[in-house]
Image 1 (cartoon, rainbow, N blue to C red):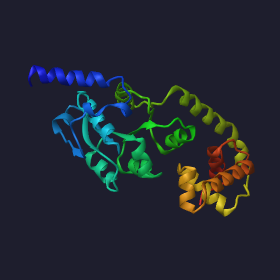
Image 2 (cartoon, rainbow, N blue to C red; image 1 turned 45 degrees about the vertical axis):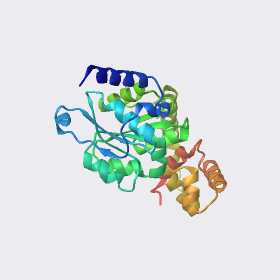
Image 3 (tube, rainbow, N blue to C red; image 1 turned 180 degrees about the vertical axis):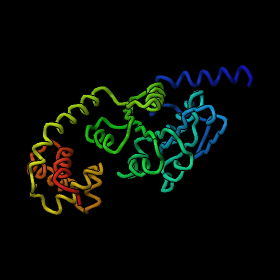
Image 4 (cartoon, one colour; image 1 turned 180 degrees about the horizontal axis):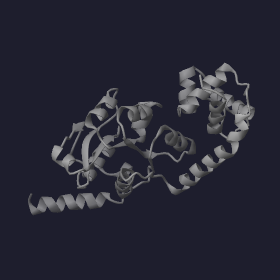
Amino acid sequence: MSKPVQDSLKTEVQACQDRPISKMSPETLTESGSQQIHSESNRTRKTTAVFVLADNRLVRESLYRLLRKKTDFSVVSQCGYTESVVQQVESTRCDVLLLDETARMNSGPRFVEKMLQAVRGLKIIFLGVENSEDDFLSAVRSGVVGYLHREASANDIVAAIRAVTRGEAVCPPHLTLLLLRYVNRLAKSAPIYRLRADLGLTRRQQQLLALVEKGWTNKEIANSLNLSEQTVKNHIHRILRQVHAEDRYEAVEALRISGPLS
């Protein structure tokens, strides 16, 4: 490789390091489309195999160009969401799946569960997510181990991949506090719920709460049950009052302790 080309690549990667992935410019991109990049020589060096799943092409290609420069990573594939993506990820036997916000929304509420069932030991990192406490707790419950806001830089993403590979979890500090408080509330409330033989929920409320348990948002529940989003919110509000729960996740725990969700 010539010296000018080497200098050009070095400048390109340095320019991306501290910029949020969502703001990387098209000038940093040269690859396009869905690309399979199997490299047996890299895998034998025990690199971390990364699958980039992002519907935003600029984000997807920026991540690919960034990660392929790291000697401890091997980008085994990069693509947008399709119906066959579970099989694609499974075929690569990757270690880490990077999932951007758009692809996450398009993939549906059970996507993470399906991926973890299909690929043993897979670590999933959400990228570019909104600052939503409900979405964060849903992600944790589904099995996600990395959660990065849209302000995260390229350096943050590289550090997150390395962290989850070491068996660590990654999320913004203020959400760590939220998680600890959530677990603490459940620990305090569980003995009370075990004493309840009948929570008095209607069949519709139990049906709705079963979808909450799966991590569905109010909008997704409304579409599934052919209800308005406001009707779903009203149902959840009544459920919280009936089971004396502070939020929807405590309500799920209440019903789970009393019996299986139907």
